Amino acid sequence: MPLADSDGTPIYYERHGSGPAILFVHGSGGHHAAWWQQVAALREEFTVVTVDLRGFGKSHAPIRPHASKPEFDGQDFPGDVVAVLDQEDLTDVMLVGQSIGSVAALRAALLRPERVSSIALGHSLGGISHPELKELAAADRAEAVKLPVIDRLLTRRFQRERPDLTFLFQQMGTFNVAKMADLRNLDTDGPSLEEIQNSGVKVAFLAAEKDAVLSVKTVTRAHELLPGSHLEIVPDAPHSMYWEVPEQYNAAVAQLRRTLTAQKEAA
Image 1: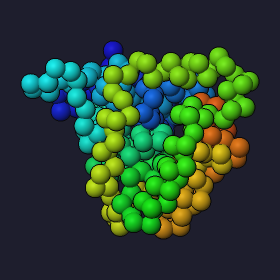
Image 2 (image 1 turned 90 degrees about the vertical axis):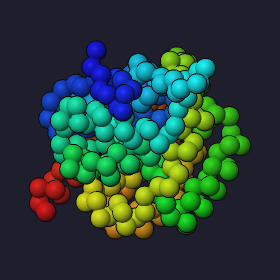
Image 3 (image 1 turned 180 degrees about the vertical axis):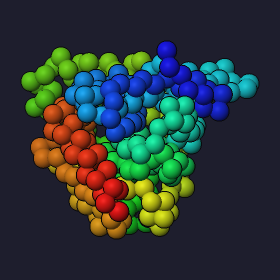
Image 4 (image 1 turned 30 degrees about the horizontal axis):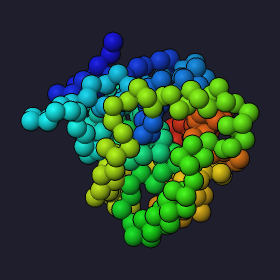
């Protein structure tokens, strides 16, 4: 079982396939196995790496001194990604974050720009510190919390037509010890637009037309504010499009990997 050491915490990860590397960072209800539809589709062309952040999936849940149960700090999650990058000695990697996992992915990219050439922020602004973007994202969240959690993540049509995959989606989170509350402080003191630009890491915003958590309008504004960034909008897709519309999602990720690699070679 592959494990990377993240400041004393064993982090589980998997590596599949060969070719240019893509490392997926899950969201609050996921873990490495949530990417089953991506691994199977992409491993013939790419090296696909999946990881369990601490407290998720098979990664250990740290117990801090004098604590009776595992405790988590969202600020530790980027280090978990970095531990895997270092252990596998990966370079020219594209990190792909899902929702709040994008925040961990962006911080990891800024910590290891010599290993990470690009990042796709899926359904997230990556915790970028910018007053206008924070205001737009807060307005989106205020609308999202009016909906049941499952309706924020999957379309009602999918829930009706695929109750089996909807049930499995909900079950995925039951394997995790860490909860959404443990990730809340992850985007505290996020990076500025200038810090991201200066890092040399290429950024792509991967958005979904029917995302009930973060609107296309907000993501488009982030793209406008970050010179040189890319914007990919998947039509008729929800917040968890990697699960609901995997073919469209996989095609978008693969195209971003090819495009961003080509740009680096041409630079």
